[in-house]
Image (tube, rainbow over the protein chains, first blue to last red):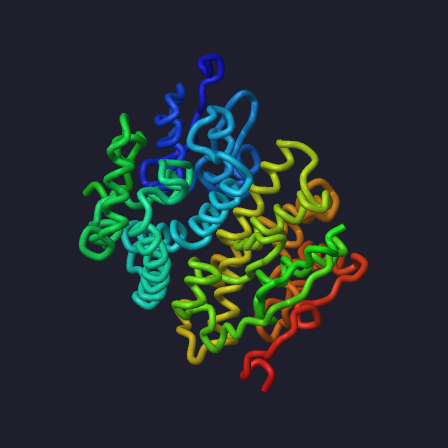
Length: 218
Length: 218
């Protein structure tokens, strides 16, 4: 049992990368508590935070059993091994999972997260930058749409850490992401329904507590 | 011995992600051959290539012993295990390596590769997009500069796959990257010298054969 060593997740509600880990923790039945980091007030950009918590300056950060873990994909892999759930069955499948986790971090999550951030949480985003990002989102969404038209989940026809990673930013409201997925990407939309049907699933703003970005809640 | 199963690396000379793998193969003393892919002619964007080689549409691709591997970080990890070189010593170091490999793919390589691509290999790049990318490069270069001011290599004070990954785009000429690293980032520049001092090291355009991008060689 993990009860003696609860998980502490440094996070904030707008962080889809934090949501990936929260989703995994709940699906594993872990005992965990969120630690709100006031990202929009600049907490994770202070020299102290970078020295004491994460030199890479990113969230989420997970504390567990004396370890401090960063990078959502590394945390997801750690939890899969720790709980023996949602991970790979053999080395070939492990490589297939890592392949998609890298694709997700490099492109699938990254472009959408940045696009949504600029569009919804910064003043006067440059239209040329939004357009550049949107084209890149569309290109990698097309790769995933094609894959999911033939598969129920990303790897192995069952929910894994790859799904929990890749859905990270896709349950945020259309008002933030500007994607109407059931219309533009029906296979992705169906996959999101399958993940959301897992017992105990909740959407990001219901899962991650803490002060919300002012403009988003205005 | 690996002689019975030579490595075939699908690549092109401008691809720093291909260079990462070529660097690892040479440092491991592997028997390998490059397979030139005419990226700028659109080869990797054809439906046939995506069906037969890599649905994610990316390079490099490595063929070995009946396996077809993609995503440079996955390939580097595979080779480290296969050769017992440049990998991690224990699970904690493995997580530390993966943490930097994800940071590299998400940000450190990604922003510079995209910036250089737009700037050097596309006509009329949008200044707003270049400026956006340059600010993000500067932010993650600052993280790495600080790290390397205190360490000879990225992890464990010895060359590893993390270094081979993160140097991927940093040996291309300043005319392409627009970074004068000895001036702007001296710790990164010193680290590049340490990696370049490894026996058998060669720069990307000396390592990866094939037709060069027209404007770059004009």
